Every structure is written in structure tokens, then in C-alpha cells.
Image (cartoon, rainbow, N blue to C red; front, side, top):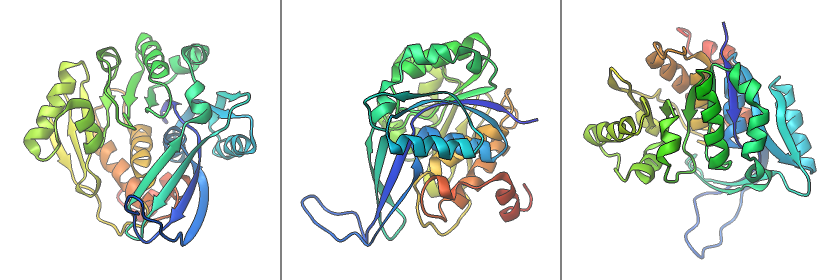
Length: 307
């Protein structure tokens, strides 16, 4: 039986500039190639969850421009429910400019556009959708006030809340108190907690910080080192799958969307779900662009025969 997942998040048009290396301040370098793809952390996570078999309901916004129509068409082809995606008049669709170097590492500039206009009123309209979900996922490319409203609604109906705090910012105790799972990377984690993630001890201190705020499960994504998982009962580092990286764009989003698609509501299979998410992410980093590289469940089965 597949999970029902609501995703509150961003929808962006990504433009990638392929370069030999990230430029230094004041330096001009040659762009070797340009490419475009559908993106936005929210949309990427929704696509990842859908391609792994979840029923996905999106809460978001686009501008009344050609990019917005293109993004809606793209998400519709994925058979994601767009009932709660609004077209914001006189506003442009969100966009990201990605600088991608020859080693597969990136730097990203994000223009929020219509994503910034999602408010509590729009979220309240989606209450019946949130209520029928098993999980709701949100990030910080849309207003934090909207995420707080969505998570408050979710808690009324026993929906598991998953927060991907990216881009990193300090988080209110109120939002943390209605967050069940928090999934920052090591950099984001340090910004939020003030604890640099450098070893097992610092990871345990980070998990304790979140537990004291009411978050029962902490997942710290560590790139090629894997994912540190802290639950009520266990602390464990789940190693990553080693692959040759082409482009890391969308890797974290693939991990979260894919993981939640197979996660049980009682989180009893969280270690297996994390491993599944990492398998999906390992495939994503071997291709170019965010959404074009996100694998289906069938592809993950094909690559990792034991899934």
C-alpha cells in the first residue's frame, strides 16, 4: 500500500551553467554549456516520492508566465495532484541558477518569485488534503509561516511532519515542537544548532538539541559519508552507496522524497527507508539536472537488485 504524501514547497525553473570550477570573487570564467530542467526543492521531493510509488499532493505556487505553465505541465505528467498549486498574478515563477563544476559540485542562486507568496490562507484551503495524508514534507524555499500552519494542521490529524530545513535558517521552537522528523545536511544543522558536525559526539549533541525541542527523529545527511539517524531508541550512521558523482543537484531532495515514500507511519522501518533513499540518491548524482535524474522505483530495483 502506497503512502499519501503532501508536499508544501517550491517550484523552480533551474538553469545550469557548466564550468570547469567555481569562480573566485571578482573572477570571470567561461561557461562550457547551459542546460535547463524543472526544479525547486519542493517539486524535486514530490517527484522523487511519486516516482517511488507514493500518492503525492502538492501545495505551492507559480507565476503567471511561460515558466509557470511549463512547471505545471511537468508536474502534471508525473500525475502529482496540483489542486493546491496557485498561479500568482503579476509574479514570476521561482528560478534557480546552478553553477556546476567538473567534479560534480555546485553552487546555487535561488530567486523565490511566486514561491514567496504562499501564505497561511492558501495552506488552510489545503486542510482536507493534509488531513488525508500519511506524511507532509516541507522545506525553507517557501515562507516559514506557511510551513508552521501546515504542520499545525497536520498534527490535528496525526500526520507525520518532515522538515528539510534548507536553505538553513534559525528555527522557532514553535515550529520544532510540531516537527516529527528533521533532515538537515551537516552545514544546515550547524547553522540551526550552533554545533559543528564533525564527529559522532557532535552528531549526538545535535540530535539531543532537537529532542529537547520536541523533534523525535533527526536525520543528518553527510553526503558521501551517509546519513546519521537518531530516533527515540537508536543512533546509527547508515553508510552511503559509493558511485561516481556527475551532478549533486537534487541529491538531498531525492533522498527525502524517496525515503518518505516507503517509510511506515510508526517509523518502524526507518533504517531500511533511509537505505532506500540513499540508493535513489546515488542514482540521481550520476545524471545531470535535478528532476531528470530522479529514479523510479523500477530503476532503483534494476540497479540494486535486493530492493
